[in-house]
Image (tube, rainbow, N blue to C red; front, side, top):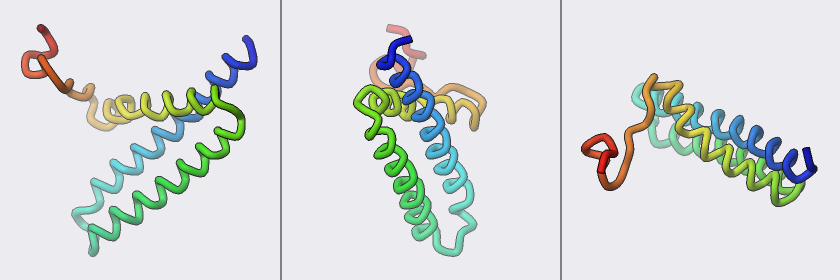
Length: 105
């Protein structure tokens, strides 16, 4: 495997882990916000902590080069449907044209 492909693959794995942690943290926050004394503060604190941690990790990944960063971005975005599926037990509903009939044109 070439260095570029290895960097891309490792970046994708790191991004997937980061995305899973970010979106799982969001899910936990949403579940607990209804019982929080200050829901707005809980949401802001959660978003701040998750954003700072993920941002710092992306900065470290970016120091490795463009391909690992690209892989991390793809992995991060790709983690969202995986976390949605893990949490709800079903895939996320489609959007856009044709979503009403199950995506069939």
